[in-house]
Image: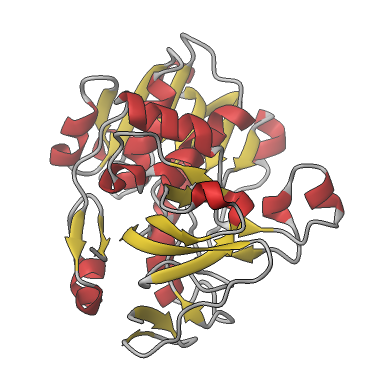
Length: 322
């Protein structure tokens, strides 16, 4: 089969990989659409140096074989973390933190391939009428929902999302539904236009000095909750400056680099820092099905053109296997 394989140093397009073998409890899925995530790009930069295998974790596909006959022929999306099932984390509902977990496209074969085998229990049936091109947003949108699972956000709270990219748009639309007073800070006026119907938008330069540092801000200019979705060191540093005393910073991006922060600001300001990863699929599927969140169309490529797809400036790029 065709697949995009990471050999530990670089991505390689292959046409001769064998079909994945089902383990007990697995389903075999014919991939219809698979999207590129920022994490996939970080892998090419060295984020997972021990990984060798098929890349990709955002997908929508059709079940061809399954231990559950009712699933055969169904359009599905899938959660990406498979725990051991026996450890404390797995027994207490924290499977995604299992120390032995296998993660799709990062420690086990992923979805940038014509076929994918994965645990049936991690699959979710796509609601009738929701297209694969829209359903493929489920995994990243679920990650946006995780913020509301971790942090209490009430109507009227001052909440800020730093970043104006793909992940930011998903997060901002979810947070707007809470009734919070939402501000989105970004660098690109044309991207910020997508937020203006449900959030206040501000160019990052409004918070920067001429030398590039962060201006001194009053409490009224800061926020109760700041979500960093920039995937950059400068975004994390800006988030630290934007949060109010006793406020919360949510680190949502997977940033593989290093940064220097004045950690004294955290206990002195009684600031909470929350790391946030994968989230619940069902509410994400429901919002997508009901049309309560909207995203630009995915720019789809043939898998052989993966370099063009990874270099695309589109809101979201991915692969079509139809």
